[in-house]
Image 1 (cartoon, chains in turn purple, blue):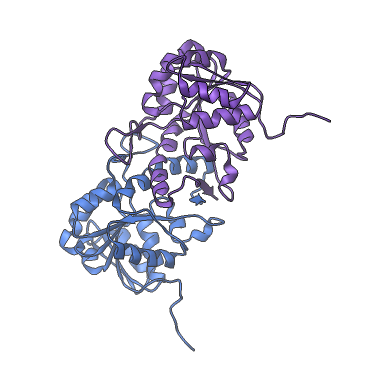
Image 2: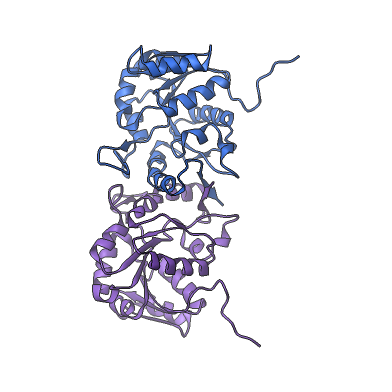
Length: 226
Length: 226
């Protein structure tokens, strides 16, 4: 009997997931299933959600602080709430992010003014750009922020072809993220260019929220027909 | 021989097109072809582009001032540049817009800060809402702002299924706009609810512009896969 890595499972590596919410748990679990070692980071070392996730996700999963996770990962996923991402990444420590691929899947949602949420930043700037400016030695790649977390790791849940976008300043970092996206099941990620495209990607969120309210389900996604 | 109106040509009516640019010309010409009487309005009565359009578009086409066009139309299309739409609509005169369907296809693009343009309003407000507030007796319906003007009146140009959105506070006004959209060839317009959905619709423009730059063609469109 031959054991082999599935052609679509993506590269095996050490990955940090910053954030213990639905997005972090979903991505972390999928990355473990794909064979990667994943450490989930949170504000405190003894975070109950991080520990519970690690226990459930199996031997290749672990949990720790933002800094412990970031230090561990070759690739770091920012899955924290957008409004606190910069603070969480500071706790992760710039030294632990330097030279690494920092995959930003967060949206800068502002729930403080009631529903629906607005964006804390948009139009002339974006969270992706703010993160790249604050951590110039990290290779920020924005992606996966334009869909629900279940669809992120299971695009087949939505019928037909549909799209995931990515952007960032570093071509090799984007190539590594595309490999991971292939592992999630995304066939042809659309590269929108440098990190300033994060503006348009994050500005998709208001109509996504409106459609979510209309459909009463997050199982839909944007497709670019052409 | 029987003469009949095509089932997909939409209702026959008097329509005002405010604005003499590519969007106004394209929509106006299509609406004439569909059998409607169309008057194109501009800042001055003797606008050369308006006159040239009317001459080319045939017997059912005419041109005049914003106010003359708005007074003429049962349905009024705002095809002016978003940054000057409120001023143009003031010239059209609130009395000429009262009780009418005001179809807002404009985008609030700000070219003053260089390329790519940003939005003059977004996130917590929109051009569609600004227009509805400024002209409370008009029935504002936002639509068609999320694609290039050729695709607006010829969705078949883009392969496969793809979508047009609309929103507004008045259900009957939206029903009338849906009839017109059917006449343009749109099978299933997506009603996003009240006019506040104009925020999400206008915030699609930055990623549209990015994709336009990538594809070097405006012949693409958003589809909501589900």
